[in-house]
Structures are given as structure tokens and as C-alpha cells.
Length: 190
Ligand SMILES: Cc1cc2nc3c(=O)[nH]c(=O)nc-3n(C[C@H](O)[C@H](O)[C@H](O)COP(=O)(O)O)c2cc1C
Image 1: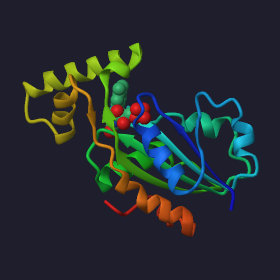
Image 2: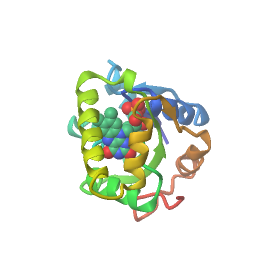
Image 3: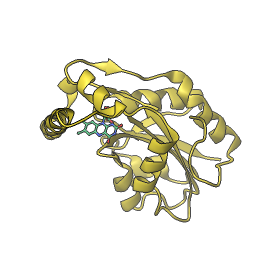
């Protein structure tokens, strides 16, 4: 087995998980956005562990990686993503449907971890999107009850929060070690 860890992280939360995973598997974590030797990193790799932050339910960087056709020799992809939503099977199913449903010919398994939020590190576009989202939630608040994710979003807006938890990577690390991706494509350890 030849494996590689690649991540795409805007504010550092996914990077943290990628580095923990790489450390446990005695590999290096490579940044998709800045690595100028990604082709070499992926050359001959049959197992890829890829991580990206969730932005409007999309996994940052995943499309770029798949579209650039850099996954030629890869037969297993372990995708992890980080977001603010609480962990649940429903959230994981929604992420799978939005990002991985159409990936064929490769064994894909998805893991969702809670990341965090750091407004100060966001680029201008993401700050704008967050402000729009905040306005929408505030408007909704006047009309009726909010979901726990919406309440959570309002609560973290003005301060840095970090929900990262190293324990969460155990399942992925064990799965990579034993290389037995499950048939239904997503983790059942919620
Ligand atoms: C514009 C924007 C959209 C986001 N959309 C989602 C989302 O759909 N679901 C979610 O759980 N978290 C969402 N988040 C929170 C990020 O996924 C979370 O901060 C993540 O841990 C960031 O990872 P990164 O720093 O590695 O990029 C969003 C954050 C921003 C700024």
C-alpha cells in the first residue's frame, strides 16, 4: 500500500486534523493549495486520505482534486471534512450526497469532524458570505425557532471557537490501516 495525506484548509482546522492523521500513519500532510509537487506526491499512490473544510455544504478542494484527474492510480479515498454543524448521521449523509455520490471507480469513505470558526482568518468573500448567512438567520429568528446549527452559528460569530478533537481520527486511521472501506460509503461511528 502506498498512501498520501492531502488537505485543503482556509483557517487551519482541517490542517490540524490532517497533521494528526499523517502523524498517526507516519506520513506527511500536503497542502493541496500550495504544494507544487502534488503530482509527485500522488504518483503511484493507491490510497489517498483527503481532508477539506465545509463551505456551503461543499468540501473545499475535493472537486479540484478530482477534476484535475490527479487520482489515476488511486483505488481508495478516505475523505474527511470539518465543519461547524453538530455530528450526526443525517449531516454526514447530506455531505456524502452533495460531494461524493457521483464518484465512481474508487472506494470512497467519508468522515465528518467538527472543526471551528475564526472570522479573523477568513478571506473577504467568506466574510461576506458569513455576514449574509448571519442576516438570514437573524431574520428567521424573528419568524420562528432556529435549528441547533443556526443557533450555534450565531453564537460563534464574534469569537474564535475550536471544536477539534484528536480522538475523532481514530476510526479513519484504523480503517486505513486495515483497508476495509465499508460498502455504504460513510462512517457509522456517530
Ligand atoms: C462561508 C462559510 C460557509 C460555511 N459553510 C459550512 C457548512 O455548510 N457546514 C458546516 O458545517 N460548516 C460550514 N462552515 C464552517 C467551516 O466549515 C468550518 O469553519 C471549518 O472547520 C473550516 O475549516 P478550514 O479552516 O480547514 O477551512 C462555513 C464557514 C464559512 C466561512
